[in-house]
Length: 401
Image (tube, rainbow, N blue to C red; front, side, top):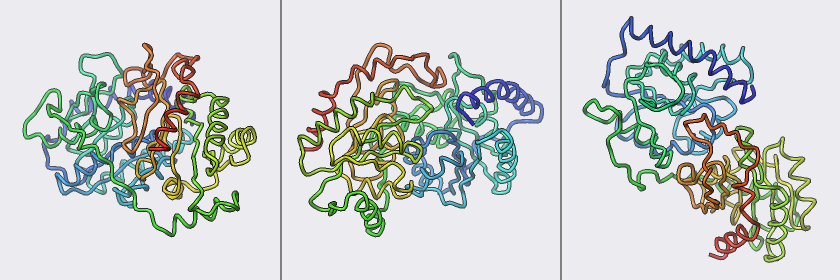
């Protein structure tokens, strides 16, 4: 299902359903409050990167309550959860959002699944989804934690929440997720939650366990494309020029990527550049590789998602747009250079070894929780202003450092 279609369904079906849900809760009673969490369900449907960014909050919840963790996510995004395996695979429920029929079927299945597992706590991580609010409301949980706009303008999600958390647009999203766990830990009712200070040390991300077998498997795939690659004396530079369809304004110009790659190849004679991407991005990656030097290759679709961390661990550095790979790489030791435009690194930077490049225009960030991350901008000057020279200088500092 396309993003705009999902937004349409969420708005025109979600609003009346949230209103009905609120009426049901008001008439038949609300869940009991402050029940000690034993089975905690996290809901993050549409963002693969957020499934990584929430990990510190899940770790804190698990430690604080000695609880079993569960997760609800769209089927296509499940692999991101499996990079760290914080949640057991049997405790992950996926919803197929490819079409309306599959969405409805899986929604009903989820409600039975949640009640069978006696989910007592739902933490709705979505910022602008009425659908996730409905799923949390009808999962049978006693504690329902979600962001609330209170007196601010924003989407209507009903009133089915026991712990209303103030979303803070001035702190990193991972700290906002921590605030939701803190709300559960509070021994008194607060309005709004959470009246706590969250330190940078609380959003340190664990590293994935990467076996030698996985690295050897990925190295063999690299050698099929680059027979000269020996895994030792040759250094791999990764370039990820794409961004998801959710926000195409995050893409830096392809010609600038071409110039950047050629500058890298000219400066460093012992490196190979691999252009990464999903299988459906293979054609674009090949076109870009053909415009660059003979040590640049398309690697889009060459490895499975589960093998990405092996590729990252073998590589020296990655330059990417603000997109999922920046967050996936954060669970490895590989540093990244990330270009930001419509969003700000202050809120959405990866939790790994990363160096953001950001023009910081007056209009940026133009997407936020207040506008459903949808911008009218058709001319991403915030990215156009970032020059090849600027990025290359950052690259040299990180590479040589």
